[in-house]
Amino acid sequence: MDRLTSCFVARASTALALWALGATLQAAENAKPDADPASETVRLEFRGKIDRQVYIQSDWGHPPQMAVWLETPDGRTIRTLWVTYRTGACDWKGKASCPVSLPYWVSRYNRETNTTGPPTFQQPVADAITRPTPKEEFCATAEVPRGSTWDYFIEVNVSGDYNAAFPSVRDDGVEDPQGNGQPSLVYRGRITAEAGARSAPKLVGRTEQLAPVDRLVGDLDGITSAKRLLSAFEVTCTAD
Image (tube, rainbow, N blue to C red):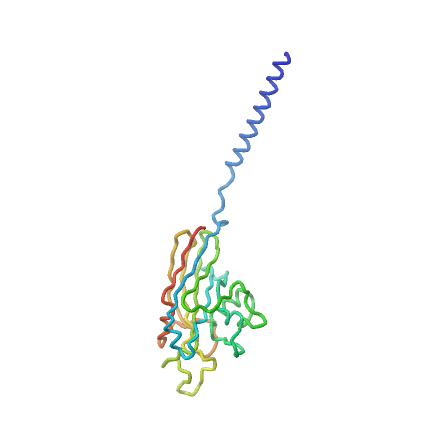
């Protein structure tokens, strides 16, 4: 074989080897499984409006305490997204604490963080989830796996919104020591995290006026103005 023919064969062999390598790499790439949708995240956005007339007509006129959190349907995972600063930092401006402000959220927060009792001034919740008390609107967001399903909760409470069913002093002489008035209300909804999904919660229960509890009372008789506090609330899902 002369030098020219030998050179040609060598180049052809190299080209063939490179082509075979490229084909092998492409086949390997094509054989990769599609990305797991569960590894992708989407955003849940929680937006609500507050009826200012409800809280300014309470005895103290203060905006409500609020908390927003997520739970998996089996209840094994709990994730607080947003809580007003006074409850989350136990900063009550003259009060040692106010355990009846958002007691149902506190019970879920205890499960989430393996703690007992409400947050304290010495051990507040993380700064990342505390927010100023909203006066008319509020918004919270969460990144969650695409396709995951969540129950979401909102607890709200206006202090000093007394009425005939929840007075400052009961007929038997028992006083409301925390100035609670109508107890906190809890709303619940469910959403599956797919782009474009929308959901609105329903009022599912209340807590107690005089003592913190870790359960909901389904009987809403006697609740008046407190039911009008949230004038709108919606959860939406986006893929950006």
